[in-house]
Image 1 (tube, rainbow, N blue to C red):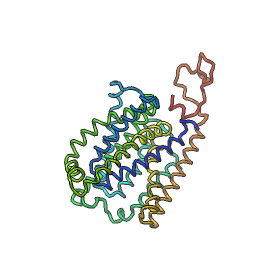
Image 2: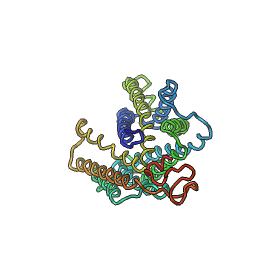
Image 3: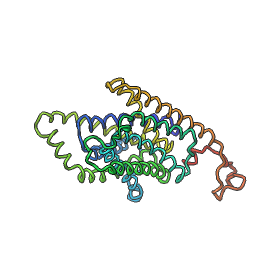
Image 4: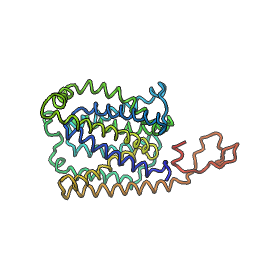
Length: 358
């Protein structure tokens, strides 16, 4: 199977994303370590160091740093940090069930943005049905909160009602912008996967460090008192560092998997996979971690799974239909018969995916 085939990229991204979700949950939730920007900065630093090590060992190659590419790529890295920051703010104030519904709605925004701005594949009725099923699954999963009107997260009841919606809207827009911009820039720069990983993480480091210094001063003092100063919880420092190290290694995998997946599929598929890869986590929670097994939780997983099947089937249909489409005659070297003049090679018909790769 070729590396350009989407199946290996999707599988690799799913596995790395699940590993990243679990390790970050351990770091940020199990140890109550409230310094997200610092964790992300450490993950980016680890990823860059691993790239440099593997490059020196001859195991991989990546484009070397140059200021021209860095200046043009920096907006993508900044958009990534904005997406993370607004998402953290939205989760802080909004109930997680409603947050998930809005995140799934973002997939529709990305799909139509891809069609409007980048001439992506059209949103067919079957694809739209898959989106609706994914949204329905998240509504069912969080119905108890949604039906009772629990928009504000517990502990944040004194916050005005517009605050969670503001941060949620900002996160939807930055998520869609990052996904679409990343896809376009990868093609424009002709970056290979490790080039994307290198520039994305390297340029994110200063932004993440500055954000940590600006917004996480109080959390740093609290974490220092808990994990470093002598006390009952200071023994957890070793396990916290171990968990952060594992999450940093998984960050390298998800950086590569995400870049690979975006390049060989689309921004919409990339976002759809990001939503669907929560299914095995939900199932494992019910099987291994005593999460409540209710009609709503089981129905939610089942509907999302069927939605994923619908989406995969619809994209496969599109791929079959796109094969053999004539190339628009925009190249002056192609004559009216669809032949590239001067070499006698018929360039009139080729796979639609190849048009994106050229």
